Length: 219
Ligand code: CA
Image 1 (tube, rainbow, N blue to C red):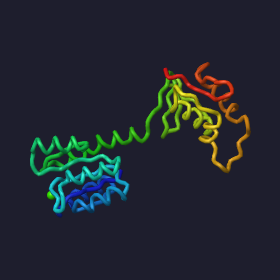
Image 2 (cartoon, helix red, strand yellow; image 1 turned 180 degrees about the vertical axis):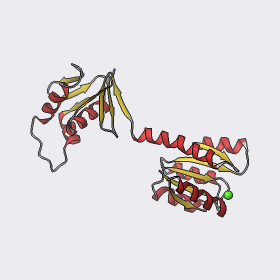
Image 3 (cartoon, helix red, strand yellow; image 1 turned 120 degrees about the vertical axis):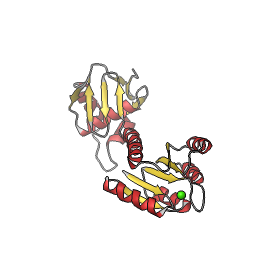
Image 4 (tube, helix red, strand yellow; image 1 turned 90 degrees about the vertical axis):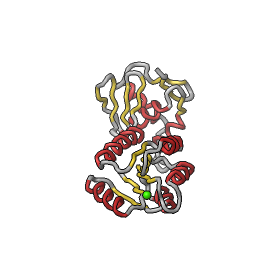
């Protein structure tokens, strides 16, 4: 997990940086708003800890610019005083959380962990249709809770069909997803993979649309 710390207080930024590194985070720092916006865009950070009181612009303005750029990182705002209007503005502008200084280090890490869990879920979702679940990051397919063994191509094929459950996937679209340009595709390879997958999952889960492709009904 990569964090961007934005704070103009030397002591606070150094102390937090050290502690968070010791806890296993990768840390990028910025001491003003302009630098923060550049680093948020180019350093591939997951979470930004963003102070509201910065020398060149308000942290709220930084937040706004980051959101305008469409960056998907999570943002925890830090504020020197508890002002409801500022808190509301920050959350309205898309901040994920808000902490008032001084705060306990443990409180900050607890909030980081919450955002981390949300991020992990978003990055590694689980597809579920009827009795079947596909854990994309773990490459695990389960039917009624039991693991099913699939080859790599079978996995990719089932995943593609589950992602578009309710819609038809043409054979050509599936081939494009399963094979690189350079790979030679045998003309009936999709049919062969579907045939093998069908032996391992419930009857009639994958429907053939004759002459077009396949579909899985949204259950
Ligand atoms: Ca400050």
